Image (cartoon, rainbow, N blue to C red):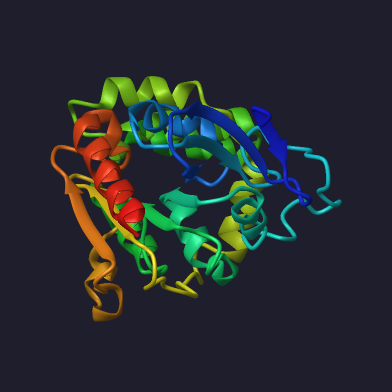
Length: 275
C-alpha cells in the first residue's frame, strides 16, 4: 500500500503510522482551510490498532489542485468524503471541529465505516452564534487587527495571521504556547474558508446519526470555540455513543492532555474490535 493517494474526486489520504491491526483511522481536520497538518500531534498521540491517515478534501489546506478535481474543487464538498471511506477497508473516520460536521453532513458514509469519532464538533450550526458571543465577550486585539488586514487583502498569509492571533481562544493557558506554534506552521487556504462560510457553516445540521457502529464524541473541558450543548438531545444519546470530556483540554485537547485523548481512542478501538 502506498503512503499517499487520491480518490477519484481528489480527496487526499496520507498514511501517518501503521501498527498491527485491521482498522484504518482517517483523520479529517477542522477549519476549514487549515489542512490535516493540524492533526499531526493527534496522530502522534494515537496508539490504536491499524493505520492512521491524514485526510484532506479537494481544495482544502495544501491539497489545492488534486488530480480528479474539477474546475470547482468545492463542488463535491463534503459528500466526496464517502469516496475516502470506500477507498480502504475497516475505516474509522475521525473529524475535528468543522471536519466532524462535514462527516455528519454526509449520510453516504452510512455502511462504509466501522466507527466514528467526533472531536470538539457539534450536531448543528447553533454553535456559531455562541462562538461569536464568546469572541465579543473575550476580545483579542491582535485578532481584530489581523482581521482588518485580511478584509483589505484576503490572501492566505493574512488569514494565517488571524489563526495565530486566536490561539488564546483555541488553547488553555497551559497549551497556548504550543498551540500558537502549531497554528503558525499550518497551511491555510482562504478559498476553503470562504466556501464553508457561504455554503455550510450557518445552515449545517447533521444529516445522519449512526446507531450500528461505535461513536466517540469527545471535547476539551475548556473548549471555547464549539459549543457542546447540542449533544444533549436524546436522539444522540444512543447506546453506541460514548461522550467523553478531556480535563484541561481546549479546542485541540490532545495538546493539553494527550493521555486522556489517547485513552478515549483506545476505548473506541476496543469497542469496534469487540464488534
